[in-house]
Image 1: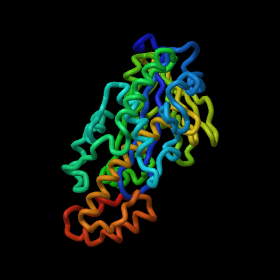
Image 2: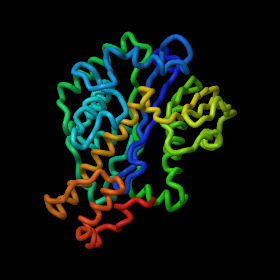
Image 3: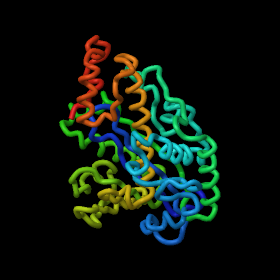
Length: 329
């Protein structure tokens, strides 16, 4: 049985930082309980209507903005809107991290993993970094009021941070960086199957790359009793996964899933927020090393190469191996 009489669990999964040369790759996972009428599989289409009293697709004074993270964040505009939404949702679940390390713990990660890297070691980012705390608290209260009448209840956020060194190690071991994303997705699905305790699960996942067939991946990741193909197309691949314990999981891999499904959009926001906080620490470290004239980087390939040329002298002292900083592709 699910908590609070819920019919099932709905999760959204998306990533940030899969393509860059610098910084971590982050998988975000959002969790909702569904307690409405009808099958869980029909639920995603009702998210925006059910939560309209608390959320919106665009930044608004009295709403939590939930949308594709690329529409809510830019380096020029800063973290404010993204942070208000992510921290507001966490506050609604009683979590108010005061820094990046507390945020990672709240998202189910191990902050001590950062200490492998000089640019993260012994460092933190105070939170909120750009948002106004009263706005965050107002968002949390607004969501709580809306959920009293909604078929959906926000259950939490998780993140899986693949740091630079781990990313390179996995690529070196498997020869395929796609295995990083799929491996993290498999971990998330296994955990939610255990959490569902034989109930119904809907997993909405943003599809990366050109893969359209995921049946074999789901079979290996979940060891189910049966995997049925519902649809496999260029836009969406969908499956029904039946577990030995009675769990029924419907899994959708959808191109640009963050644009159509609120749980996926929220996952993309959490992933982007966590990655940008890591990049803040990386940039601070090298600005200290090189000087205030160093332009920060977002870590994407073209600008990362510029950044690496600018910090070449700081990398020559042997303080760390270069493969700890530059991800293998």
